[in-house]
Amino acid sequence: MTASFYIHKESWLHRLAAGRKLFCLAVLGTGISFVSDLWLLAGALSLCVCLFPAAQLRLVVAYNQVRPLFWIMAALFVAKLFTGPLSDAFVVILRLCILVLAAGLITVTTKTSALLTVLERVLTPLSVFGFSAPRMAFALSLVIRFIPVVGQISQEVREAQQARGLGTNIFALIIPFVLRIVKMAEQVSQAIDARGGLPDAKPSPAVMRRSQAVRRSVSAPMGAETDQPH
Amino acid sequence: MNVMPFKTIIEFNAVGYQSGEHEILKELNLFMSEPRIGIVGSNGSGKSTFLRLINGLLVPTTGEVWVDGLETRRCAKQVRDRISFVFQNPDNQIVLPTVEEDLAFGLSRSDLSAEIIAKRVDDVLERLDLAHKRHEPCHVLSGGQKQLLAIAGALVRRPATIIFDEPTTLLDLRNARRIADVIYSLEQNVITVTHDLTLLEGFDRVMVMNDGEVVADDTPKAALSYYRRLMS
Ligand SMILES: Nc1ncnc2c1ncn2[C@@H]1O[C@H](COP(=O)(O)OP(=O)(O)OP(=O)(O)O)[C@@H](O)[C@H]1O
Ligand SMILES: [Mg+2]
Image (cartoon, rainbow over all chains, first blue to last red; front, side, top):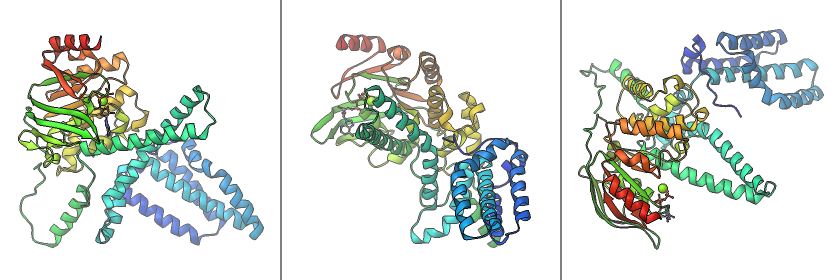
Protein backbone atom coordinates (compact mmCIF):
# COMPACT_ATOMS: atom_id res chain seq x y z
CA MET A 1 0.00 0.00 0.00
CA THR A 2 1.34 3.45 -0.82
CA ALA A 3 2.42 5.17 2.37
CA SER A 4 1.01 8.61 1.97
CA PHE A 5 1.04 10.24 -1.38
CA TYR A 6 3.27 13.18 -0.62
CA ILE A 7 7.06 12.75 -0.67
CA HIS A 8 8.90 15.63 0.93
CA LYS A 9 11.80 17.17 -1.06
CA GLU A 10 13.05 20.69 -1.54
CA SER A 11 12.53 21.21 -5.25
CA TRP A 12 11.01 23.97 -7.34
CA LEU A 13 8.19 21.60 -8.24
CA HIS A 14 7.42 21.11 -4.57
CA ARG A 15 7.39 24.84 -4.05
CA LEU A 16 5.20 25.62 -7.06
CA ALA A 17 1.70 26.59 -5.90
CA ALA A 18 -0.80 23.72 -5.92
CA GLY A 19 -3.29 25.76 -7.94
CA ARG A 20 -0.76 26.32 -10.73
CA LYS A 21 0.15 22.67 -10.86
CA LEU A 22 -3.48 21.63 -11.14
CA PHE A 23 -4.05 24.27 -13.78
CA CYS A 24 -1.13 22.90 -15.81
CA LEU A 25 -2.54 19.41 -15.44
CA ALA A 26 -5.89 20.58 -16.78
CA VAL A 27 -4.21 22.31 -19.74
CA LEU A 28 -2.05 19.27 -20.43
CA GLY A 29 -5.03 16.94 -20.24
CA THR A 30 -7.05 19.00 -22.66
CA GLY A 31 -4.05 19.59 -24.89
CA ILE A 32 -3.03 16.00 -25.42
CA SER A 33 -6.55 14.96 -26.30
CA PHE A 34 -6.09 17.00 -29.50
CA VAL A 35 -2.68 15.58 -30.29
CA SER A 36 -2.35 12.27 -32.04
CA ASP A 37 1.17 12.65 -33.38
CA LEU A 38 3.17 9.80 -31.90
CA TRP A 39 6.42 11.74 -31.76
CA LEU A 40 4.83 14.68 -30.02
CA LEU A 41 3.19 12.42 -27.46
CA ALA A 42 6.43 10.54 -26.92
CA GLY A 43 8.13 13.88 -26.32
CA ALA A 44 5.49 14.89 -23.77
CA LEU A 45 5.90 11.54 -22.05
CA SER A 46 9.67 11.93 -21.79
CA LEU A 47 9.18 15.40 -20.40
CA CYS A 48 6.87 14.02 -17.70
CA VAL A 49 9.40 11.34 -16.84
CA CYS A 50 12.22 13.88 -16.67
CA LEU A 51 10.24 16.04 -14.27
CA PHE A 52 10.55 13.34 -11.61
CA PRO A 53 14.34 13.64 -11.28
CA ALA A 54 13.88 17.39 -11.61
CA ALA A 55 11.76 17.18 -8.46
CA GLN A 56 14.56 15.21 -6.78
CA LEU A 57 12.54 12.02 -7.01
CA ARG A 58 13.93 8.70 -8.13
CA LEU A 59 12.64 7.25 -11.40
CA VAL A 60 11.14 4.33 -9.55
CA VAL A 61 8.58 6.80 -8.15
CA ALA A 62 7.49 7.51 -11.74
CA TYR A 63 7.37 3.79 -12.44
CA ASN A 64 5.22 3.25 -9.33
CA GLN A 65 2.63 5.66 -10.70
CA VAL A 66 2.00 3.63 -13.86
CA ARG A 67 2.65 0.14 -12.53
CA PRO A 68 -0.84 -0.39 -11.01
CA LEU A 69 -2.36 0.41 -14.42
CA PHE A 70 -0.23 -2.02 -16.34
CA TRP A 71 -2.88 -4.69 -16.94
CA ILE A 72 -5.57 -2.16 -17.71
CA MET A 73 -3.31 -0.57 -20.30
CA ALA A 74 -2.45 -3.94 -21.79
CA ALA A 75 -6.16 -4.74 -22.11
CA LEU A 76 -6.87 -1.34 -23.60
CA PHE A 77 -4.04 -1.77 -26.08
CA VAL A 78 -5.31 -5.13 -27.25
CA ALA A 79 -8.88 -3.83 -27.52
CA LYS A 80 -7.69 -0.89 -29.58
CA LEU A 81 -5.80 -3.21 -31.92
CA PHE A 82 -9.10 -4.80 -32.90
CA THR A 83 -10.82 -1.52 -33.66
CA GLY A 84 -8.14 0.43 -35.47
CA PRO A 85 -4.56 0.73 -36.62
CA LEU A 86 -1.56 0.04 -34.43
CA SER A 87 -0.69 3.72 -34.15
CA ASP A 88 -4.09 4.49 -32.56
CA ALA A 89 -3.44 1.91 -29.89
CA PHE A 90 -0.11 3.56 -29.11
CA VAL A 91 -1.69 7.01 -29.00
CA VAL A 92 -4.21 5.90 -26.37
CA ILE A 93 -1.56 4.28 -24.19
CA LEU A 94 0.77 7.27 -24.49
CA ARG A 95 -1.98 9.71 -23.54
CA LEU A 96 -2.92 7.61 -20.55
CA CYS A 97 0.68 7.33 -19.38
CA ILE A 98 1.21 11.07 -19.72
CA LEU A 99 -1.87 11.85 -17.67
CA VAL A 100 -1.12 9.31 -14.99
CA LEU A 101 2.48 10.48 -14.69
CA ALA A 102 1.55 14.15 -14.57
CA ALA A 103 -1.17 13.58 -12.00
CA GLY A 104 1.17 11.35 -10.01
CA LEU A 105 3.86 14.00 -10.11
CA ILE A 106 1.44 16.48 -8.60
CA THR A 107 0.33 14.16 -5.83
CA VAL A 108 3.87 13.31 -4.76
CA THR A 109 5.08 16.91 -4.83
CA THR A 110 2.05 18.58 -3.22
CA LYS A 111 0.77 18.28 0.32
CA THR A 112 -2.74 16.96 0.70
CA SER A 113 -3.72 20.08 2.58
CA ALA A 114 -2.53 22.30 -0.29
CA LEU A 115 -4.48 20.26 -2.84
CA LEU A 116 -7.54 20.39 -0.64
CA THR A 117 -7.30 24.15 -0.24
CA VAL A 118 -7.45 24.45 -4.03
CA LEU A 119 -10.35 22.03 -4.16
CA GLU A 120 -12.09 24.04 -1.47
CA ARG A 121 -11.66 27.21 -3.48
CA VAL A 122 -13.00 25.55 -6.62
CA LEU A 123 -16.00 24.11 -4.76
CA THR A 124 -16.83 27.26 -2.81
CA PRO A 125 -19.32 28.59 -5.42
CA LEU A 126 -21.41 25.48 -4.69
CA SER A 127 -22.13 26.86 -1.22
CA VAL A 128 -25.14 28.65 -2.72
CA PHE A 129 -26.72 25.18 -2.90
CA GLY A 130 -25.96 24.62 0.77
CA PHE A 131 -22.93 22.50 -0.06
CA SER A 132 -20.00 22.92 2.36
CA ALA A 133 -16.70 22.93 0.49
CA PRO A 134 -14.51 22.85 3.63
CA ARG A 135 -16.34 19.78 4.91
CA MET A 136 -16.08 18.04 1.58
CA ALA A 137 -12.35 18.74 1.48
CA PHE A 138 -11.97 17.59 5.08
CA ALA A 139 -13.84 14.36 4.36
CA LEU A 140 -11.43 13.61 1.54
CA SER A 141 -8.40 14.22 3.71
CA LEU A 142 -9.85 11.93 6.38
CA VAL A 143 -10.14 9.22 3.75
CA ILE A 144 -6.51 9.68 2.78
CA ARG A 145 -5.39 9.59 6.40
CA PHE A 146 -7.40 6.49 7.30
CA ILE A 147 -6.72 4.29 4.27
CA PRO A 148 -3.55 2.88 5.88
CA VAL A 149 -5.22 2.60 9.29
CA VAL A 150 -8.10 0.59 7.88
CA GLY A 151 -5.62 -1.58 6.01
CA GLN A 152 -3.79 -2.27 9.24
CA ILE A 153 -7.00 -3.15 11.07
CA SER A 154 -7.99 -5.60 8.38
CA GLN A 155 -4.57 -7.24 8.62
CA GLU A 156 -4.78 -7.47 12.41
CA VAL A 157 -8.21 -9.06 12.21
CA ARG A 158 -6.99 -11.52 9.61
CA GLU A 159 -3.99 -12.49 11.70
CA ALA A 160 -6.06 -12.85 14.86
CA GLN A 161 -8.55 -15.12 13.13
CA GLN A 162 -5.83 -17.14 11.44
CA ALA A 163 -4.31 -17.72 14.87
CA ARG A 164 -7.66 -19.14 15.96
CA GLY A 165 -7.89 -21.25 12.82
CA LEU A 166 -10.74 -19.20 11.41
CA GLY A 167 -8.70 -17.53 8.69
CA THR A 168 -10.97 -18.69 5.88
CA ASN A 169 -14.32 -18.05 7.57
CA ILE A 170 -15.63 -14.91 5.95
CA PHE A 171 -17.94 -14.02 8.90
CA ALA A 172 -15.14 -14.46 11.39
CA LEU A 173 -13.25 -11.86 9.38
CA ILE A 174 -15.98 -9.37 8.52
CA ILE A 175 -17.76 -9.11 11.88
CA PRO A 176 -14.75 -8.14 14.04
CA PHE A 177 -13.52 -5.90 11.22
CA VAL A 178 -16.80 -3.97 11.04
CA LEU A 179 -17.03 -3.75 14.84
CA ARG A 180 -13.57 -2.28 15.05
CA ILE A 181 -14.21 0.20 12.27
CA VAL A 182 -17.45 1.36 13.91
CA LYS A 183 -15.71 1.79 17.25
CA MET A 184 -12.89 3.65 15.60
CA ALA A 185 -15.28 5.93 13.74
CA GLU A 186 -17.00 6.80 17.02
CA GLN A 187 -13.68 7.65 18.66
CA VAL A 188 -12.46 9.64 15.67
CA SER A 189 -15.60 11.71 15.70
CA GLN A 190 -15.13 12.42 19.42
CA ALA A 191 -11.52 13.35 18.77
CA ILE A 192 -12.57 15.78 16.04
CA ASP A 193 -14.98 17.40 18.49
CA ALA A 194 -12.31 17.55 21.17
CA ARG A 195 -9.90 19.19 18.75
CA GLY A 196 -12.23 22.02 17.85
CA GLY A 197 -14.90 20.38 15.74
CA LEU A 198 -15.57 20.03 12.04
CA PRO A 199 -14.53 22.71 9.63
CA ASP A 200 -17.70 24.74 9.27
CA ALA A 201 -19.61 25.87 6.26
CA LYS A 202 -17.71 29.11 6.01
CA PRO A 203 -14.59 29.06 3.81
CA SER A 204 -11.21 28.32 5.37
CA PRO A 205 -9.09 31.23 6.70
CA ALA A 206 -6.90 31.17 3.58
CA VAL A 207 -9.90 31.55 1.29
CA MET A 208 -11.38 34.20 3.58
CA ARG A 209 -8.19 36.24 3.50
CA ARG A 210 -8.05 36.03 -0.25
CA SER A 211 -11.61 37.24 -0.65
CA GLN A 212 -11.03 39.94 1.98
CA ALA A 213 -8.01 41.11 0.02
CA VAL A 214 -10.13 41.25 -3.12
CA ARG A 215 -12.84 43.16 -1.32
CA ARG A 216 -10.32 45.55 0.16
CA SER A 217 -8.80 46.25 -3.22
CA VAL A 218 -12.20 47.17 -4.69
CA SER A 219 -13.65 49.10 -1.74
CA ALA A 220 -12.06 51.87 0.31
CA PRO A 221 -9.36 50.84 2.81
CA MET A 222 -10.96 49.57 6.00
CA GLY A 223 -8.37 50.58 8.57
CA ALA A 224 -5.94 48.47 10.52
CA GLU A 225 -5.29 44.87 9.62
CA THR A 226 -6.88 42.60 12.19
CA ASP A 227 -5.02 39.36 12.27
CA GLN A 228 -4.69 38.81 15.98
CA PRO A 229 -6.19 36.02 18.04
CA HIS A 230 -9.56 37.04 19.44
CA MET B 1 -8.02 31.38 21.27
CA ASN B 2 -5.73 33.15 23.69
CA VAL B 3 -3.27 31.52 26.02
CA MET B 4 -5.41 30.41 28.90
CA PRO B 5 -4.50 31.27 32.46
CA PHE B 6 -3.24 27.93 33.67
CA LYS B 7 -5.86 27.26 36.23
CA THR B 8 -9.12 25.49 35.73
CA ILE B 9 -11.84 24.89 38.23
CA ILE B 10 -14.06 21.94 37.55
CA GLU B 11 -17.21 21.25 39.48
CA PHE B 12 -19.51 18.23 39.37
CA ASN B 13 -22.93 18.95 40.85
CA ALA B 14 -24.89 15.76 41.49
CA VAL B 15 -23.68 14.33 38.18
CA GLY B 16 -25.13 11.04 37.05
CA TYR B 17 -24.68 9.28 33.74
CA GLN B 18 -26.92 6.55 32.48
CA SER B 19 -26.91 4.60 29.26
CA GLY B 20 -30.30 2.97 28.85
CA GLU B 21 -31.01 1.14 32.10
CA HIS B 22 -27.35 0.94 32.97
CA GLU B 23 -26.18 3.47 35.54
CA ILE B 24 -22.58 4.18 34.60
CA LEU B 25 -21.89 7.03 37.04
CA LYS B 26 -23.79 7.67 40.28
CA GLU B 27 -24.36 11.13 41.80
CA LEU B 28 -20.91 12.61 41.79
CA ASN B 29 -20.22 15.81 43.70
CA LEU B 30 -16.67 17.00 43.15
CA PHE B 31 -14.53 20.06 43.05
CA MET B 32 -11.25 19.84 41.14
CA SER B 33 -8.60 22.53 40.86
CA GLU B 34 -5.30 20.78 41.66
CA PRO B 35 -2.59 20.94 38.99
CA ARG B 36 -2.26 17.16 38.67
CA ILE B 37 -5.12 14.79 39.33
CA GLY B 38 -4.95 11.04 38.76
CA ILE B 39 -7.80 8.57 38.44
CA VAL B 40 -7.51 4.82 38.87
CA GLY B 41 -10.11 2.07 38.90
CA SER B 42 -10.99 -1.33 37.51
CA ASN B 43 -12.05 -1.88 33.91
CA GLY B 44 -15.57 -0.66 33.30
CA SER B 45 -15.69 1.40 36.49
CA GLY B 46 -16.60 4.54 34.50
CA LYS B 47 -13.25 6.35 34.23
CA SER B 48 -13.43 7.16 30.53
CA THR B 49 -17.03 8.26 30.89
CA PHE B 50 -15.98 10.54 33.74
CA LEU B 51 -13.26 12.16 31.60
CA ARG B 52 -15.63 12.69 28.67
CA LEU B 53 -18.07 14.45 30.96
CA ILE B 54 -15.40 16.97 31.94
CA ASN B 55 -14.94 18.46 28.48
CA GLY B 56 -18.47 18.00 27.27
CA LEU B 57 -17.90 15.10 24.88
CA LEU B 58 -20.67 13.53 26.94
CA VAL B 59 -23.25 15.49 28.87
CA PRO B 60 -24.60 14.18 32.17
CA THR B 61 -28.07 12.64 32.24
CA THR B 62 -28.61 14.26 35.64
CA GLY B 63 -26.82 17.15 37.34
CA GLU B 64 -24.34 19.59 35.85
CA VAL B 65 -20.65 19.88 35.09
CA TRP B 66 -19.13 23.37 35.36
CA VAL B 67 -15.73 24.39 34.03
CA ASP B 68 -14.61 27.86 35.08
CA GLY B 69 -18.19 28.95 35.33
CA LEU B 70 -19.18 27.43 31.98
CA GLU B 71 -21.76 24.67 31.95
CA THR B 72 -20.65 21.88 29.61
CA ARG B 73 -24.09 21.31 28.14
CA ARG B 74 -24.48 24.90 26.98
CA CYS B 75 -20.86 25.92 26.38
CA ALA B 76 -19.20 22.78 25.02
CA LYS B 77 -17.14 24.72 22.48
CA GLN B 78 -15.65 27.15 25.03
CA VAL B 79 -15.03 24.32 27.46
CA ARG B 80 -13.12 22.38 24.81
CA ASP B 81 -11.01 25.43 24.04
CA ARG B 82 -9.95 25.34 27.69
CA ILE B 83 -9.59 21.60 28.06
CA SER B 84 -7.88 19.33 25.53
CA PHE B 85 -8.24 15.58 25.44
CA VAL B 86 -5.64 12.92 24.66
CA PHE B 87 -7.26 9.55 23.94
CA GLN B 88 -5.85 6.15 24.66
CA ASN B 89 -5.29 5.21 21.04
CA PRO B 90 -3.48 7.97 19.15
CA ASP B 91 -4.46 6.44 15.81
CA ASN B 92 -8.03 7.56 16.40
CA GLN B 93 -7.22 11.18 17.01
CA ILE B 94 -4.70 11.87 14.27
CA VAL B 95 -6.98 13.04 11.50
CA LEU B 96 -4.81 14.44 8.73
CA PRO B 97 -2.22 12.64 6.59
CA THR B 98 1.05 14.27 7.65
CA VAL B 99 2.40 15.38 11.04
CA GLU B 100 2.45 19.08 10.30
CA GLU B 101 -0.99 19.14 8.70
CA ASP B 102 -2.47 17.22 11.60
CA LEU B 103 -1.14 19.69 14.15
CA ALA B 104 -2.46 22.64 12.18
CA PHE B 105 -5.90 20.99 12.11
CA GLY B 106 -6.51 21.81 15.78
CA LEU B 107 -6.12 25.51 14.99
CA SER B 108 -7.83 25.61 11.62
CA ARG B 109 -11.16 26.73 13.08
CA SER B 110 -9.61 29.53 15.10
CA ASP B 111 -9.20 33.06 13.79
CA LEU B 112 -5.42 32.80 13.94
CA SER B 113 -3.46 33.83 10.87
CA ALA B 114 -1.53 31.25 8.88
CA GLU B 115 1.75 32.67 10.22
CA ILE B 116 0.70 32.34 13.85
CA ILE B 117 -0.55 28.81 13.23
CA ALA B 118 2.77 27.89 11.60
CA LYS B 119 4.68 29.37 14.52
CA ARG B 120 2.67 27.44 17.08
CA VAL B 121 3.09 24.22 15.14
CA ASP B 122 6.85 24.81 14.99
CA ASP B 123 7.03 25.47 18.72
CA VAL B 124 5.21 22.33 19.67
CA LEU B 125 7.13 20.14 17.19
CA GLU B 126 10.35 21.48 18.64
CA ARG B 127 9.21 20.95 22.18
CA LEU B 128 8.21 17.32 21.69
CA ASP B 129 11.22 16.45 19.49
CA LEU B 130 9.11 15.80 16.44
CA ALA B 131 10.59 18.50 14.22
CA HIS B 132 12.41 15.97 12.05
CA LYS B 133 9.12 14.15 11.43
CA ARG B 134 7.08 17.14 10.39
CA HIS B 135 6.61 16.10 6.75
CA GLU B 136 6.22 12.38 7.45
CA PRO B 137 2.94 10.56 6.93
CA CYS B 138 1.46 10.02 10.40
CA HIS B 139 0.96 6.30 10.01
CA VAL B 140 4.67 5.55 9.65
CA LEU B 141 5.38 6.95 13.12
CA SER B 142 6.10 4.53 15.95
CA GLY B 143 3.54 4.08 18.72
CA GLY B 144 5.48 6.39 21.02
CA GLN B 145 5.81 9.06 18.35
CA LYS B 146 2.10 8.82 17.57
CA GLN B 147 1.28 9.40 21.21
CA LEU B 148 3.65 12.38 21.25
CA LEU B 149 1.90 13.71 18.16
CA ALA B 150 -1.47 13.28 19.88
CA ILE B 151 -0.15 15.26 22.85
CA ALA B 152 1.29 17.86 20.49
CA GLY B 153 -2.16 18.15 18.92
CA ALA B 154 -3.58 18.91 22.35
CA LEU B 155 -0.79 21.33 23.31
CA VAL B 156 -0.93 23.34 20.12
CA ARG B 157 -4.37 24.58 21.12
CA ARG B 158 -2.85 26.08 24.28
CA PRO B 159 -5.48 24.78 26.66
CA ALA B 160 -5.49 25.40 30.39
CA THR B 161 -5.98 21.72 31.18
CA ILE B 162 -5.18 18.49 29.37
CA ILE B 163 -7.07 15.27 30.01
CA PHE B 164 -5.36 11.95 29.32
CA ASP B 165 -7.17 8.63 29.04
CA GLU B 166 -4.58 5.91 29.67
CA PRO B 167 -1.80 7.68 27.77
CA THR B 168 0.80 4.97 28.31
CA THR B 169 -1.23 1.78 28.04
CA LEU B 170 -0.21 0.95 24.47
CA LEU B 171 3.45 1.87 24.94
CA ASP B 172 6.62 0.04 25.88
CA LEU B 173 8.45 0.96 29.07
CA ARG B 174 10.77 3.50 27.54
CA ASN B 175 8.04 5.33 25.66
CA ALA B 176 5.80 5.21 28.71
CA ARG B 177 8.55 6.95 30.70
CA ARG B 178 8.98 9.50 27.95
CA ILE B 179 5.26 10.32 28.01
CA ALA B 180 5.34 10.47 31.82
CA ASP B 181 8.20 13.00 31.62
CA VAL B 182 6.21 15.06 29.14
CA ILE B 183 3.18 14.98 31.42
CA TYR B 184 5.26 16.15 34.39
CA SER B 185 6.81 18.93 32.31
CA LEU B 186 3.48 20.48 31.31
CA GLU B 187 2.56 23.86 32.70
CA GLN B 188 -1.08 22.93 32.09
CA ASN B 189 -3.27 21.28 34.67
CA VAL B 190 -3.44 17.54 34.06
CA ILE B 191 -6.17 15.02 34.72
CA THR B 192 -5.19 11.49 33.82
CA VAL B 193 -6.68 8.04 34.00
CA THR B 194 -4.02 5.36 34.14
CA HIS B 195 -3.22 1.83 35.23
CA ASP B 196 0.42 2.86 35.61
CA LEU B 197 0.45 3.60 39.32
CA THR B 198 4.04 4.83 39.45
CA LEU B 199 3.03 7.66 37.10
CA LEU B 200 0.79 9.04 39.84
CA GLU B 201 3.31 9.13 42.66
CA GLY B 202 4.14 12.81 42.14
CA PHE B 203 0.53 13.89 41.58
CA ASP B 204 -1.43 16.22 43.86
CA ARG B 205 -4.56 14.16 44.16
CA VAL B 206 -5.70 10.67 43.21
CA MET B 207 -9.26 9.39 42.97
CA VAL B 208 -10.19 5.73 42.98
CA MET B 209 -13.29 4.74 41.03
CA ASN B 210 -15.28 1.60 41.47
CA ASP B 211 -18.59 0.73 39.90
CA GLY B 212 -19.45 4.30 38.90
CA GLU B 213 -18.50 5.86 42.23
CA VAL B 214 -15.48 7.67 43.60
CA VAL B 215 -14.60 5.43 46.53
CA ALA B 216 -11.39 7.17 47.57
CA ASP B 217 -10.13 10.68 46.99
CA ASP B 218 -6.84 11.48 48.66
CA THR B 219 -3.10 11.98 48.31
CA PRO B 220 -1.46 9.51 45.91
CA LYS B 221 0.03 7.49 48.75
CA ALA B 222 -3.22 6.99 50.64
CA ALA B 223 -5.42 6.57 47.56
CA LEU B 224 -3.09 4.09 45.87
CA SER B 225 -2.73 1.93 48.93
CA TYR B 226 -6.53 1.90 49.23
CA TYR B 227 -6.72 0.91 45.56
CA ARG B 228 -4.20 -1.91 46.00
CA ARG B 229 -6.26 -3.31 48.87
CA LEU B 230 -9.46 -2.97 46.86
CA MET B 231 -7.98 -4.92 43.96
CA SER B 232 -6.45 -7.74 46.04
N1 LIG C 1 -21.66 4.18 24.74
C1 LIG C 1 -21.95 3.32 25.73
N2 LIG C 1 -23.14 2.70 25.76
C2 LIG C 1 -23.43 1.83 26.74
N3 LIG C 1 -22.60 1.51 27.73
C3 LIG C 1 -21.40 2.07 27.73
C4 LIG C 1 -21.01 3.01 26.74
N4 LIG C 1 -19.75 3.40 27.02
C5 LIG C 1 -19.38 2.74 28.12
N5 LIG C 1 -20.37 1.94 28.56
C6 LIG C 1 -20.33 1.11 29.76
O1 LIG C 1 -20.08 1.96 30.84
C7 LIG C 1 -19.23 1.35 31.78
C8 LIG C 1 -18.06 2.27 32.06
O2 LIG C 1 -17.32 2.45 30.87
P1 LIG C 1 -15.99 3.29 30.81
O3 LIG C 1 -15.45 3.17 29.44
O4 LIG C 1 -16.25 4.64 31.35
O5 LIG C 1 -15.08 2.49 31.83
P2 LIG C 1 -13.53 2.60 32.12
O6 LIG C 1 -13.38 2.71 33.58
O7 LIG C 1 -12.92 3.65 31.27
O8 LIG C 1 -13.01 1.19 31.66
P3 LIG C 1 -11.58 0.77 31.04
O9 LIG C 1 -10.61 0.68 32.18
O10 LIG C 1 -11.85 -0.58 30.47
O11 LIG C 1 -11.21 1.78 30.01
C9 LIG C 1 -18.86 0.01 31.19
O12 LIG C 1 -19.63 -0.96 31.84
C10 LIG C 1 -19.21 0.11 29.73
O13 LIG C 1 -19.62 -1.12 29.26
MG1 LIG D 1 -11.50 3.69 29.67
